[in-house]
Image 1 (cartoon, each protein chain N blue to C red):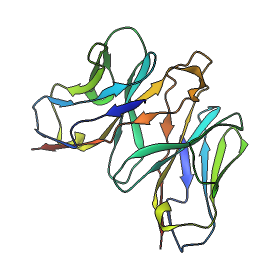
Image 2: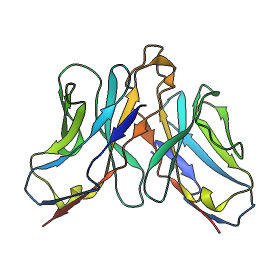
Image 3: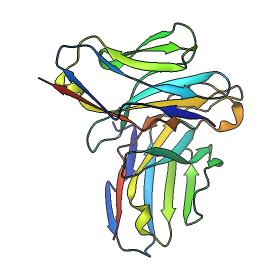
Length: 116
Length: 117
């Protein structure tokens, strides 16, 4: 079965410290991996994606993620957290098998809380 | 210059009623989606349309009927609303996914918060 796991429901970080939000996946074929952020009562905003190429992907707002095929992981990172980064973060995978219709399979979300 | 818009933003209604949610995108995309986010924030695909053609129907009850009048619009009609339909419904759009699959980014609307009483 194809799935995405975010093992931490919540991550707490002090402002200025580095942050990591973890994501592991299980899909058939090569995965296309995405991170989205959801602020309270808002829609999902695209942060970054991995399709192919360099395993380190840089995205919006200073976020980056590293694709690790052997560990089937795609952890989201930021060198220095801001209070404004506090939000709900979703990892998602789009199976590359052609008949999947482009659907995204989401992890359960990780609530990031950055304290001053 | 809204990219993906949904109306209404909030919808409170009684069990048994029929309601519709509208979605429009001005990104020039040809594929649109409906996702449901439950009370635990879990997101799951419901439908996908490409050029007005249904591509994905993820075992959604047939009380839910998507309609795509053109590739910029994908509406969701729900018949005989039930308590369990209470959720946030997100519309999204992207460019077409080719036969080999590609990482076309999906852009999401602001969501419609549906509460069934």
